[in-house]
Image (cartoon, rainbow, N blue to C red):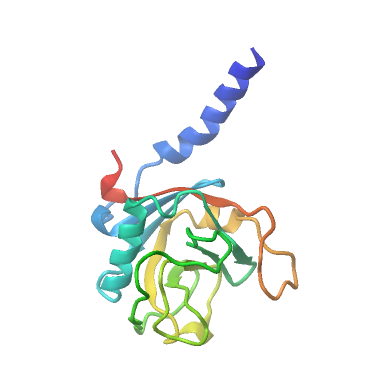
Length: 187
């Protein structure tokens, strides 16, 4: 009986995220849906300003690369980073070559999604990306903007953060992207 009640309770927690409709007018072929341990995040990909980066995100999502990948670096008031489906700690990429930067004039503000890269090379973005908690003008023209959260910033806000004052932003026992899908692939 207890197992049945636990199952029903778990089902009630999962159903709202799954049942939540996608935003009206969303180009589902160019959006990703991230079901996390805290809820659902929907990102509109900016194929108009970063077509190669957007295609990489969709390719990796379709391959299941992002499933069960942690938000390994989460800094309150700055950003939440994820996408290391290789090493799960922020040191890895994918089996594909790094991408040449696709910088734009789109400013880094709350909800903007950017591609992470090695600090020493503008052409080193691969699989990792980050979601901004607040404006980050120092990132403008330095990182590729690949999209914007159009639903679920409240979920991003709930992600477990690194301890205050942590220079690295590394999270112990982090929240995860449970499943990442291109919106048009969801049945």
